[in-house]
Length: 229
Image (cartoon, rainbow, N blue to C red; front, side, top):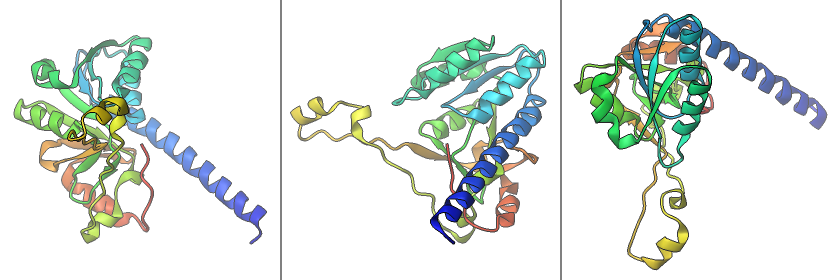
């Protein structure tokens, strides 16, 4: 194939993927919104288009929600979530990450997104998700994960581990301070792994499944795919 032909193939493939992704988010919104009750108090962490779509669809359907949103340090993506939810007319409270255990007793459900879903039902998501899920599990607050099926990882069927990205320390502590303290080290993992034991269900565009059923979707994946935020 010529370069022009290859460009056209790649462009059409990207457009098709983008279209499928948008459709899956809308389907997740419909399915997830039905799982929420009028008056529910929700806690969420980090930025997820699927989670936002669920909450906004439930609100459009007349369900009165209150949402606790963590700041999600160090990138503070939670602030964007809080602005969007409040702008949509949803009662929203922004909290610091370390206040999760303080407010979890007020929540009815935790809803988070996923960067990837492993064959055993564990999820990879923004750092701090595993802690929130564990705190919620201990407090008997149900934990929902919203994830398109393209985020299910076929590689994990064969025992491959999903690599956790570690990002630059400058988003935690600026370089000028680091240089003054040569014996100071900063670790900044971008994601963590949440155990399937701390997850109640996963909402996909194909329906709701328990984390233990993730392996069935993974088996259907014909080839490895790229996971996006």
